[in-house]
Length: 246
Image (spheres, rainbow, N blue to C red):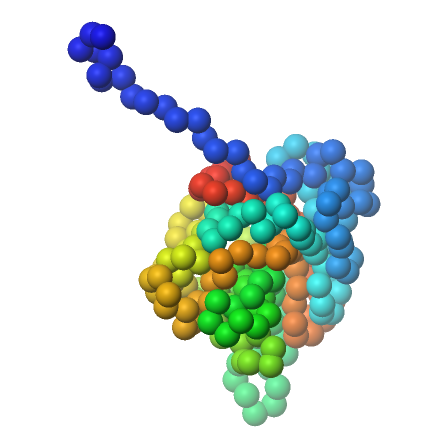
């Protein structure tokens, strides 16, 4: 072995995503094999981020328009995973109607949601690593949100200083149930206000599970949105290491 060989970098193969969906093999009007559909959404051959096809979420006043994956592939992600997708939202977006006597209102919309069992209370929870609220001026906050029933939901949100651009945006997230860590990036820039690093066994305010039963991708707004949001997803990937841009 020569001295030069000690200077050569060791390049490890990149781990493939556990879940990878680019919609290219799906017929228009359909959804990917293995997923179920909630509400009005389908694959279309126009305006895709990569390739020719993407998932379109059609406008409606409220409720889910998304695809859901369940089973061993989701459970196999275990206690931690990285996620990546591309999101485009038609602009201008709907904005909330502010009720009389109030000066603020929101439309809460979920893009990625995982169903699981709370490690703190052992009840059913819905963890939302890609979640938004739209304010009256069209600005949005990104947030980490967990819903439980009948317990109150809780969230950690950013300031209302972000906006949907009408263009494709790169969304990345990281969840670690063992370390109770959560992070979110938009177009490669971390949203620092929503970062959670509770540490092992400290579940209050995070409740990140040790495994998920299902993952949902799409759009679900809980307050009325008039004519509704139109949005698109493409190049969804979830795995054990950071996937990055495509």
